[in-house]
Each structure stands twice: as structure tokens, then as C-alpha cells.
Length: 368
Image 1: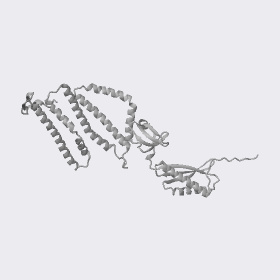
Image 2: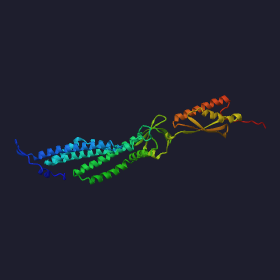
Image 3: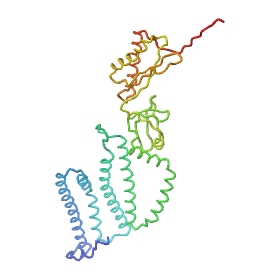
Image 4: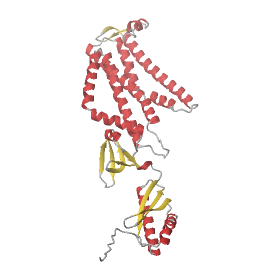
């Protein structure tokens, strides 16, 4: 280490020498100096760490933000063995070691420092991912699984980038030329990107799904001829449980370009229904059909009637159109309301003597 001069340190320490068996007169000044520096650095590092943490904990009691808590946890996460390793590294500068030993120990120390720096940085990355991605967005008390997936992807990418930078740091400090290595990695990265463009497309599509939020886990969606409930939004694909029960796996890139209907976003369903009565039905009973339908919907709690009209003189029936709303996006609730309306309409028509129409054809014979 250029900034640390062992000769200067030795000049400040009184000479310590003694007569040792088999070794004769031996100068112990480097050993004593290295020992004091090792102990002093360990104590100083630990003292500074404890003082800074204590000061920050006192300040955190007066603040409403949780950023200071992240800093405290990051400082507490500094490993004692890393501090010890750095102290040993500095203390060994007082001794002449073989080149292979110096290089090997340098590599271990640089790797430990890089690892500790990465772990320190990951505290803040995890805080940011949790704060801005992994959160309850709709206030239902549950974290969206899609948000959890996006947060994990951000942390994974951050780890990869940090370890790549850490590796370059270690190699550079060991005297290895990294310029050509970085250039090679750049060319290799381009080749890998072309080879994995489908996977990378799905990866970025998953980010698009998270930030745009066209659907969430638990939503009922329709994609072309397929329909089902979203069970999982992964890095590469989305899994949908269809109405038939099988699992449908769709790539995220396909979902970002497809036309998706999301029924979970509905607050209510608008239903248009038709039925017909025979032409033989007396006019007064035909006029009373509207009132019958209105009374039926007054008994259905999950639906409200919008309108009912005699709309068309069909080929074999007087056609009525009924428009009503079901106050739920649940498909089962809609079917229950529709079924209740159909049963009640059949009952009322049976009581009043009104017949439902069905396709018929009347043939008149005329004798000439």
C-alpha cells in the first residue's frame, strides 16, 4: 500500500531487541510494531463502529424516516473478521513475505473488502426495492405477488452488477489489466444478448407488466380465445388457470403485445338479455310484461334493472330486451343473478298464462 510507509512507522518506535535461543541477537521491533498496529486498528475500527452506531441510534429516535435505520443495520452488518483481516494485512507490511504469499493474501483481502462493500450497498438496494416496489399498493393489507417478483428481480440484477464491479476492482488491484477484459465482456455481452433476446424480451416485459399493471395475480383475464385467473407473474412467463382447470403458460413478451380483457377491473357487469313471447299473447298481457320484469328485479339483491322494452317484431315472436347490472365482477355472482331472473320470469309467465315463443312457421292453404 503506497499510502502506508513501514519505514516511517518503524522510525517512530523505539528499537526492541533481545537474545533468543538458536536465533541469537534478534530485532523484534517489526514484530512489536505489527502487533501494536494490529491491536490498535482492531480496537479503533470497533470503537468507531460502536460510537457511530450509538450516535445514529440516538438520532433515529428523533426522526420519522427509516433511512437511518438502514444505515445502522448496514454498519452493524460489517463483519469482525473483515476488520481483523484488514488489520492483519496492514500489520504484515512490516515483514518481507514471498511474492506468491503477498499476492495470495492481497487477493483474499481485496475480495473480503469487495464482498463487505457489496453487502453494505445491498442494504440500501433492498430498502429501495422494498420501499418503492415491494409494497401494498391497493390498501388491502396484502403485497401484490407481482410487486414481490419485481423487487426480487431488481435485487438480483443489482447483485450481478455489484459483483461484476467487485470482480473488476479485485483484478485491477492485483495488477491485472482489465481494459481488455472489459472490452471482451462487452463484445461477449452483445453476443449473449443476441442469443438470449427472447429471454431478455420476456424479462423486460415482466418489468413492463409490473409498472403498467394491466393485470395482477388473482385477476380474471381473457387473451384471445383463452380465459382464466392469473396465478403467477414470473420473470419469463405468466401462468393462468383456465376455466377448464389446466394451467396456461404465456410468455410475458406475448402478453405485452396481446389484447387483454381484465374482468377484475370491473366494478359491475352490464348484461343484455332477450326473450320472446308468442304473437297470440293478448295485448294487455304484453303491456304488463315490463312491470313483471321490474318486480322480479326488485327481489334480486345483486342486480339492478336498467331498462326493459318490446324492441322487435320477430319472425315468430315479440322480442323483449332487458338490460341490467350485476353489482360484482365475480362471474359466479353474475350467473346466479341471471339464473334467478330466468326462474322468476318462467314462474310469473306460468301464473299469468304467457307463453315463451319458439321458432314456428304457419302454413295457410287456399283452395283455388
